[in-house]
Length: 393
Image (tube, rainbow, N blue to C red; front, top):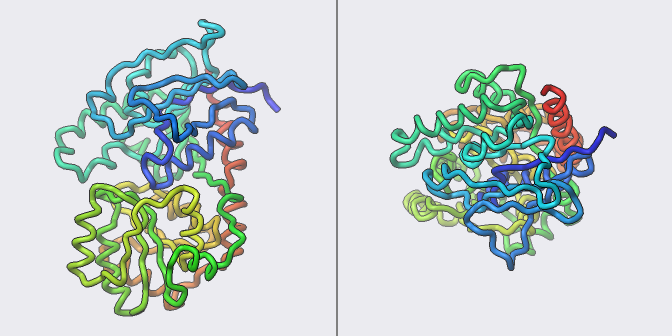
């Protein structure tokens, strides 16, 4: 193995700050990198010790890596742009990391110029501008957000994207040279999601009816994620499959409005808001479902919950625009639904439940996830990008 790499990870948010899979993936990746020769701190923190709102640098006793975390993922723009000082390593003030990995542009920007000629690898998880496009006042802040993102992305020695589509966004929108971009898929600890329980056993444990077709959607209840379209689509799905049940797992500011829509459409017995699902119970919910649904509107690279679902042996239906489509299409084209309004989504879901779309078996889903997305395989690819960045300078 090559010489170990000391990495400084910046912009990794508090685990599960957003229950859409991204934070879980970052934690999983961090845990797998040391086996690939990249020293990195596992960003788990004991629940009894709250993380501060300001940036904090910690140095693990058993490793010579420094991890910079930002606990408050929902901080205001002005607070994000403050320039924190990164304390030097206490054992050697002159010691610099071999590579700086940047995970979230607005958190990385304030410290962007503090590392001199140390190579920077930017993990691009989607456009910050797109993520906030549906918010009030987004148009006024969009130019500032874009300029900040462009500075970070164009300053990267290498950029890691989850899909080729994201790479195209970096090239077209942020003018990042193609030769700087590397496609590395999302990852999942497949062993943790490979449960020994059958679906009936899990449903009994969770209080889910065993005699109904069950769909699962794991998303934060935020605007721009296609949740309104999914609820509208369930009106059509119910016409074709009257006893269908959709479980929507997640919390967020849209909860009250989404519940109002469920009531207005007469779907109280068809759509269940499960609220926050803890990390240890999430694999059980995936296993209990006949299929998982990942609707997508603005945030187009949210394919990580799809990988988790496949790892449990549950097929997943995704839209044809976004990183999730590229991740699951090689397993089966029938898992990819055409983009459009709620009618296209509802028709595709109904076809899957009625057998007009061929869903892969549980074993096929699990084998596919292990072969392409296991955290050990993906961590090895990330480590190679880090080494490539180091050798470039």
